[in-house]
Structures are given as C-alpha cells and as structure tokens.
Image (cartoon, rainbow, N blue to C red; front, side, top):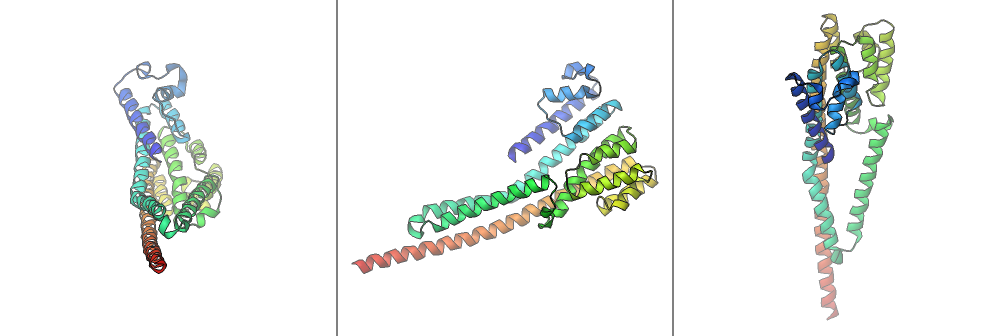
Length: 301
C-alpha cells in the first residue's frame, strides 16, 4: 500500500507539472509530448515521467486534448490521485498502532515460549495467516464483481462508492470536454469496476440510449446514490449538468473518504482490543507457567 501511495503522489505531481507547462505555453516537444500522436499527444509526456494511466485518466486526457482543455483535465486527474493517496494514508494511520501491537504480541509469545509453551505463538501465526488469506479472498472476489463481499460490514457502501467515483470522474471529464452525453455515459459506465453498482449503471445506460434523460435513466435503474441522482436531476433540469456532475463527484469523494476513515478507526479499535486480550492471555500464561515450574523445582528438592 505504501508503494501505491507513493505512485499516486508522484503521478499527481507529474499531472500538475505537465498542466503547468501547457498553461505556460511550452510546446509539446519541450515537455516530452508527441505532436504527431493526435489525441494521445499528452500521453507520451506522462509516460516519459513514468506515469501509468488508469482507464479513466486515459479517456479523460484524450477527450480533454480534443476539446482544448488538457490543462484542466490534467489538474482534475492530479486531484483524484491526491485524494486516493490521502485515503490510503488515513487507512494506514488507523491501522499502524494496532499492527504494531499485533507484531509485539507475536514476538512476546515467541520470547516466552519456553515458559508458556509454543501453543500461543502457533495460535497467533495461524490467526494472522487466516486473516491475510481472508483479506486476499475478499479483495479478489470484490474485484471480480462477486456478490458475497457486499454482506460484510461496511462493504456495500464502500464498494458502491468505489464504483460510483470513477463513473462520475469519467462522465464529468468527457461531458466537460464536449463529448455528447450518450457516448460519454457509455464510456463512463465501462470504467466502473465489476459488481452490483456497475450492473445498475449498465441498465441505466440502456435506458438513456433509448432517449430518456440521465436523471430518469438513473432513477429507473436505481443506480448511484440517492444524493447523486438528486444533484444530477437538478443540474440536468437547469441545463447545468456539467456543474452538477462536478458537485456530485466532490460529494461522493468526501463521503467515501469519511467511510474509509471510519472503517480504519473501527478496524483499529477491534485490533487494539484483540491485542489487549492477547497481552492479558500471554501474561497470565507466563506467570502461570513460571509459578508452575517454580513449584515443580521446589517439589523436586
């Protein structure tokens, strides 16, 4: 995760640097771009800086370049990367101390194994391994769109937010770049990760392609959060859909960030409580074993 944070922060800096260079009027060749690459002219400059674009960023930058809004699109991509890095840092901050306690607990169980036996250390190793396997299984299932992870605590809200944000990012970038709503929405739906939310978005896109409004399509499919649908309906009715998409995106990012922080705090509290119980267990086992051995020595005399 630390590597992912560093990658996102570096990408955000590169996006901002290229945007600043373009706004200053520097030619593409001077910043590593490829004038002969057409819609992908900016991509070469980013690739030369070691940035691997997501599907959302790739689409947004192509259409942003076509519309003459490459600088604004790059800054939007930088903001998204910065927020993602911030979310990850908050998650790590919430888990850092409990993780340290868990490691110290394992070390303590190993250090006192001659007195309390190897059972506590073996139990902790098995427990940690089981948790790691469970986390990997949940992550893989969620990435493939399986339904069972949604039944876990907090999972449904987080998974829906993780699907809604890239959809709104792409739709906002494409529509703001002048792409008509129908093809922009079809492309945005493709950036949502597999799962419950993506299925509803595909239903909404089919309704939209039949000539209904975006608000009606989303309401029919029950896609996206209710707040998002309300914002888009107001914006679409007022002819301010681009602005509404931007406001909805900011709102969902903030809500998703708070949900991630809350999950980190809850997980940290549970891990802390488990570590305290483990410490008490080892202390009681240690002194029980110690006095038992002491009694055995006295009895032998």
